[in-house]
Amino acid sequence: MHQPNFFPRSSTLAKLFRADIWVVLDDVQFNARDYQHRARLAPLSAPDAQEWLTLPVHRPHGRASRIDELRLVDPDRSMKHLDQLVRHRYRRSAHWAGTNACVAKVLAALEVSDRIADVAETSTLALLSALGWPGTVVRSSTLDARCGRSVRLADLTKAVRADTYLCGPGGSKYLDETPFADAGITVSYPPPPAWSREPGTRSLSALWAMAVFGPATLREELAVHDVVRPSPFPAIAGPS
Image 1: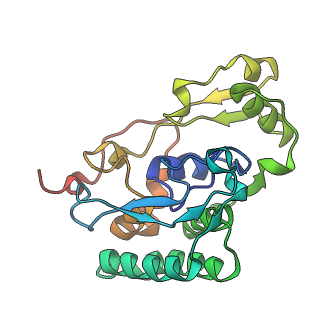
Image 2 (image 1 turned 180 degrees about the vertical axis):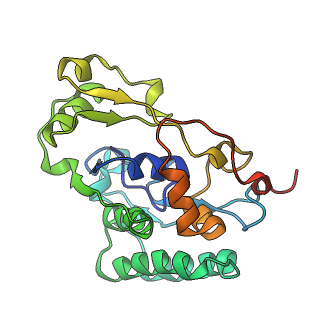
């Protein structure tokens, strides 16, 4: 389970890739400091030199607005900014065709929807599709669940008839496993990809990894379950 993130980080993509079902948390409160409407990009050989790719949004209820209520301020301008910045950063990549195909799906989504939830979900699914992910998507707004962070996550897991909940590094800091155990659900903490532990890569969008490694290598690394192994890409740390 995860909020719809705009071209998510590699650790988030890895968690979703290892799952059979992605429950999109589209009805939770929007966090302007998170990755729901923005992503961090960097040059191919310098992951430390990062910049934000942001899609400005309008919050109809201020800070209390839910993700599924947000609208893009200027979809046309966002399209141009997205296309120009990604081309500037990654068009020289050997894997540009695959990277650009993911971006093209998001540009198409921007033409038909001004909802950031739709655009962000499309960006994640574009990456997952490029990796051959066979899973399914269910939105939390269509499911019944009790209030309370861990209780709600356990209820949502049960609602989609899953027997295991995959928890990322961030979620492990607050998750209460008791409601999962009460429902007979196993909680698993798959490790993030090896390269996402390298300096400067933790906050980077997986779009960078797609451009640097290509879909075949990226798929191989994300498919590793519950195994911590050294990064096969020692050169990605960039300049010191």
